[in-house]
Length: 367
Image (tube, rainbow, N blue to C red; front, side, top):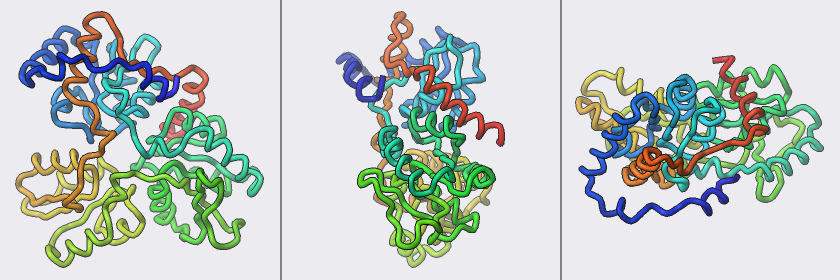
């Protein structure tokens, strides 16, 4: 069942949860967690709201949480406070006896939605006609299970923002060219850091079914899928230039999903965990402007009051799709489980799961 079918079948949040007091909802969640004990596991992604993160048994990035879920064999129910592709990955890595639940099926990722399997199949055929059997597909873990499965069945692998460089190096030992999807910016920034010039990178437009490239296509080493993170693209060169003029002592740290121009001008760039650890290890009194999702930036600000921390873009809002899961939906999912009903279960079919796991395992074996 695809996401659209799931959304069509999703029941609406019952009215009683919309009017319930926050204190009552929090108390009910605590009681249900005590009721289930180790049979319930709640992973919470860094970008989630504080109202649900407070109940997370583990916090982290998407792959880290999926791995922790897989290690937790005692949990019958994994209620994932994240988005659809994260819950899919958790289902792929966990056992058959475990049910993965996404409290709100509307919680998605606009970047992951920028690459679907039908587009990839069409594009792959054209790429094969152009380049022959010289391409290895790599996909960011921020992608659907079907995209991961395609990469797995074609000898490719998944990557995270933490290990993208290592995986790109490995990929070039397998084939002459790399197709990197769905985030063009992470692919471009990673390839550039490995010494691949920008003129040897082409962008594949899945809407027009064509390459966006000026020059001889035979010179291309990296094909970048035309996708992006709607949040990280909102950090701009103008944001950095303004900060350099008004507060030149600020250290600027950004996520590699930002554009190449922003990453070049920043002082540092790295994964979510890299950003968190860098701020944690920074001296008291240091100044930081962070270019990543606003829920996380606010949490970092509240955690490190001894440092001056701001968002690189002062007008940034939380990611609308990453921000879907709230306390009412979490409570609804948990109370449904207590009543013996599994709602909003995320289940990847066996064939897709098998091939997607190949892609994940190729990455994990090189961790």
